[in-house]
Amino acid sequence: MQILKPAMAGTLESSDAQVTVEPGDGVIEFHLQSSVINQYGNQIKKVVYETLNNLDIHDVKITIVDKGALDCTIKARVEGAVFRAADVYEDLPWGGTIR
Amino acid sequence: MQEGKRLKGKELDQLKKFLEFMDLSYDEGIEHSVCLYNDDSEIIAAGSVDQNVLKCIAVHPDYQGQGLTGTLMSELIQYQYEHGRSHILLYTKPANEAMFSDLGFYTIMKTSKVLLMENKKQGFSSWLNSLIKETPIFASSSDAKIGCIVANCNPFTLGHRYLIEESLKQCDYLHLFVLSDTRSFYPADIRYQMVKEGVADLSGVILHKTSDYMVSAATFPTYFMKDKSVAQKANCELDLELFGRLIAPALSIKKRFVGTEPTCKITGIYNQSMKTRLPDFGIEVIEIERKLADGSAISASLVRDCIKAGDYETVKRLVPENIFRYVLMKGGGSMMEIQKTDSLRQIFGPYINSSISNDDNRKEKSEKEQALFEMVDDYIEQA
Image 1 (cartoon, chains in turn yellow, blue):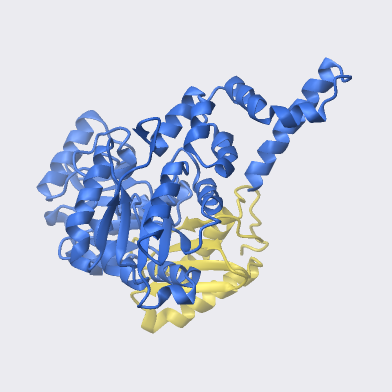
Image 2 (spheres, each protein chain N blue to C red):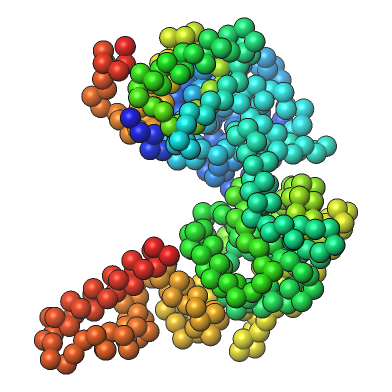
């Protein structure tokens, strides 16, 4: 999938994460801000990269402001942002690339 | 909880009252506000949007510490993305720095009164680096006399050309910043292209784009309201502070050139403020008398007025020859299509006539004309 335009998903509420994606410069550029970066920074990064890989995204600037979100939340927010950025709003591949 | 919108009437009065209580004032340029209410319908938190800038963000002291700023900011940022804006700036009081850095904002500049932040890590410093990259190495030596001009060039006129030529007499290299704001009559990339071509033959001019860091909605919010003349004061302190403190030193700029301002009040105040503020940063402000045409000062607003009125003969006398076709192209959404076609016919008439022979019948003739207009359109769009 291709990132066509900047898009975001999520909020800054506690237990959520705000994910923004933009067209990249050929690679995945990852920024993370989190109050639990020392405890879970690597885990969050792992989830994000896995999710992007599942969606076949290899060229993106992704910024995450994490407020203590669980892995499933982070995954859902990344997917939300990516599909918005790719202008896909209907017939989402539930059970396919989103699972 | 209240969905955000542009507030009016009673609701607006309530917001203004709340901001006053919080020691903030409601800015005229605000296009969208989000307010949170308590059970008694009193505002307990509010934030507003002006272009890509978040401002007037406040939470009532009795309700602080509940994460209301997060709710507010989520709404505001969502609004910005929905409007295609991904570079978001905000200003607030310096005391709030820690709170907003937790929400994904990074400090551009902090003074004793105001804090300017953006949502991109190193957005400002990478812009500064791009300025330095655009500058040839010999133009950054400390012996060179380095000046700068900041201009909108909406459109580029003989007045701009004159200001640049006069400034070059007083310095070795001239940084020319073209505003990137999108609210002008001519779009930003067309303006940049006009200037690029307009100064191509002058050596020593270094061209830059201002991004959101000079005379933008964030640094100088009233500049783009000048036509509506709602702003009572210029509100340009932040712009000058940022320029003097961070931008000018990065490029060793020692002089800033401006044209005298005979008509516009806001620009007049801006010039005046420059003269009082910039010398503190070791920058000399030099005002250059405007070039006259037919007895009155050439200004971009005059050119715009002529274009709107369809007076292309006057426009021709006010802009450089090689820029004329750009100026013409935009023609403004407000210009009648028939006027546009008529003036194009006048100007490109010779070309059209040479490509159309008298043997063609009427229909063929008009088809060929149409094709030619489209060609010119395409050409300008590409440029």
